[in-house]
Image: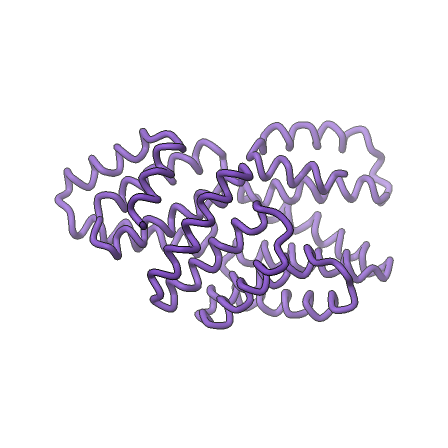
Length: 280
């Protein structure tokens, strides 16, 4: 139940609400190492990671990992290793992430849990993009998509696959998967995935000769993240910085500033329309 609630708060980006409720719950539970306390700490850790407080997230996940190993529960160990890998990815330590995810994949082999396997191979796909292994990254993202149980999970996989295909210079393929990521993240309320997909859409807009549209989309993405109180994933952050720099080198200074400001004023619906029109 707590894992489901934390996923709901992440999906709907009600992060402050979720954090407050979980902190209230934690204050009422004795610090006795019980499973219920661990689950509350873990849910808080997931929110902390999304908001960029990585050390707080790491402490809760490491406790989870020790608990799972003490129980001999392969599923819990694999989920914890995958979560630790996500924290390393947030620190842009992709080599460590790949190693943790390969261990998680090995541990999870006996477990009959499609969502767990999707989580691990999807994260592995993203981490491999971080070390420049784009072909392997794309293959793992596709494998995760085959296992994805929900639109929200699929939206992440499509965004990650779009990123890998950008690395392979397959602009048409990347555009296709970013369109799906945008549509499914809006459908499921995964606005943090929407922000990642919009960063990819801005890069494609620039590739297609639309630097003004690229900057407007990036301006809207910056505002969306600020409103949600979330930080960009490292690879999307770097992609956004590169796109911004190239677009500004093409446009006059005042035109670039105007495009960015225009994007910051767009509603979510309008930026989605703008992004989809720019990459079609």
